[in-house]
Length: 375
Ligand SMILES: *Cc1c(COP(=O)(O)O)cnc(C)c1O
Image (cartoon, rainbow, N blue to C red; front, side, top):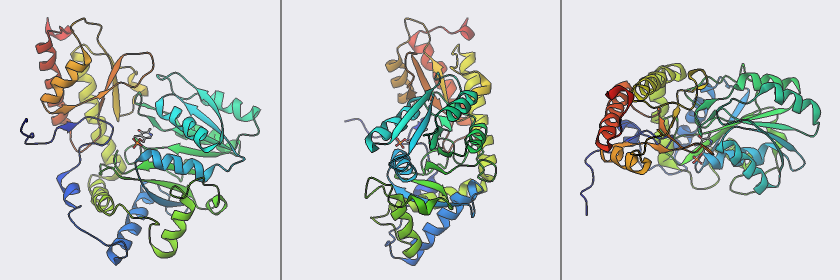
């Protein structure tokens, strides 16, 4: 058997991602769920998550066990009543997942699809809402992790508000790094998780839902374990999660939120990711790689690169060789275009990104793949 590697690889993936040593160390405790410290931990985390999107009193924060998709599914089940209808704005795989969730839940859904390299079209949304009066809710993915594109949530929210419908945001790969202020962007609910831009460990997500409309969501959920209304009632009344809480995830997230604050909050984190993204894109372009997206559509979260049309380039080989050097990248998720992705998020900065690009250069040389910078 191979000896285990001395250090963990750098995860250039969209979550799980590389976390700080201090976030991992924060988990070295056992709290009982009725422990006063645990109840305070919950309150502190929920208040902090609300503060990150300027939603102090306007919204509620409901944490939930599971990966991010559990939170998205719980949000849709909680917000869209059985007789409701969702208009789903799709430009990637996570948008399609929302439609799939609706079909499991038996919620009516209609889809407005845009190409994966184009943002959601606000004018088309406007017309769709004017025509179909049955639509009660609109769903959008803020940063579509499939391509790395940022959708214009502020403009979408304005249109949805004008038509007096409710907006649901999958903010999974945006929350904590891209701007999202409840004071400026009206939304009924958003879902996100601990293990993306918040740089904590996987195991829990959360939904931030408008306080005013929340009581009316009672009874909407299809599932006992994903019933957000009951989860909130339990937390509100007794400070208790309904089922075994992911205590260690909460301990890690508490520390991760502290580190986010120390970094200068959402703006500070965004600056680091922008720098990671710039170093990555410039370096990869120098090596001859093209990005799927033009720079103005690219969010500083994850970058999609097109596979070079070179016979000597094989993605599995490229992936494995980078892996052997301690860098984990991500396969592409686009329909119809061969691509791969490299994430800019996680506990690392421009120096490690430069080292990752240098590793890509070496791997290309080993594979005998010429690039424009080599001649
Ligand atoms: C990561 C992600 C999710 C949730 O994925 P999980 O694998 O369930 O954590 C949902 N939406 C988007 C946009 C994501 O990036």
